[in-house]
Image (cartoon, rainbow, N blue to C red; front, side, top):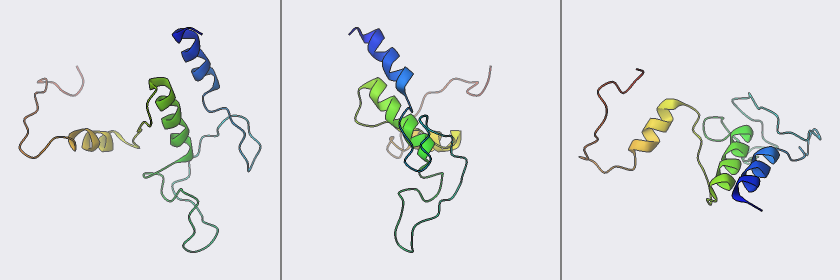
Length: 104
């Protein structure tokens, strides 16, 4: 299979898996910000949408497959993406940026 066909197949099948609870074949968009757990101290793996969200998890899995990477990260906001990107630089690092970094 060519790389293009492989990518097309990955993209066409992204998010298509049966939802155990509802039987949906396509991953639903989860708008919930918080998640209920079976009992105290027992997590479903999802606590608060800023830390993990089922829809975002499918996106991350798909991006990792596309890039042939072990994992991918998608953040819940632009500010969290900026914090994540800049957290790799040690204290005192210099960053070169365009004069008009926001917009045109």
